[in-house]
Image 1: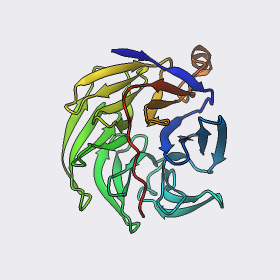
Image 2: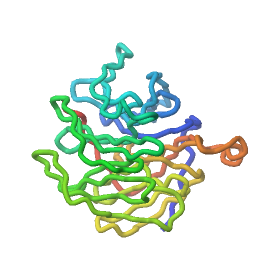
Image 3: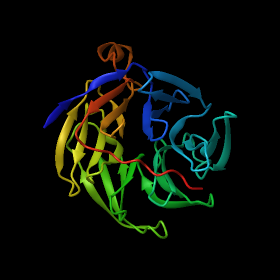
Image 4: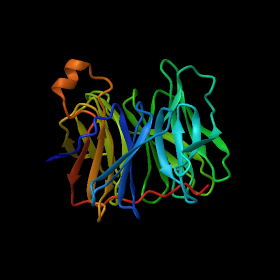
Length: 288
């Protein structure tokens, strides 16, 4: 089954990522990692703003007490939007050359999870608890990417892009512990690499395919259920938003395209939208 997306916002992000829907502001947020900024858009009014952060910004999530938690090139930080100020929290891979945090998410109990990447080195998956303590949950990862949880909260899904695998872990909600890592979706023969990841209200996984020109939807058993063909080579992630959480917003990038490639793909780096008959979920906020 294939469906068609629309070009929604011509923002031309170098590395657009991490889309996030704010349920009370009715606004779409996302990051431009290499642009060191995040953007906010209100579909109802067309408002669009860009906020410079000053660091490579892998992912951000909202905090219950206000502001955001961000995973950056200098570790995990809290962002105060009123003061436009970052406050460092933890930087576990500060000694690794060129290491930075990449994708992340919030578990059902309000903990923040984020993974790292470092060229030529292995990386890790980290959990930030509500008391701001940081814990390494796994290591030996190529490039950490999309993170999400099953509807019953018993399984954590985590993407290692170079391995072309989305892992499943047994997840202990009470303690935040993970165990029994196993490949859930492994696609070694497919073009491109799994990137950002979300789970919808039916328990299905939507995985953006970096370099693969598509978004893939898998059912809770890991079976490919549908493919969303993209007009750009490097879709990066997606999120459900809109009034009924049935609009799928998709980020993309042009960072690996040369000048000729950018001319061939003039929409690379833009935001795309797909109207669906499937509802997404509102992601929890960081409770610390």
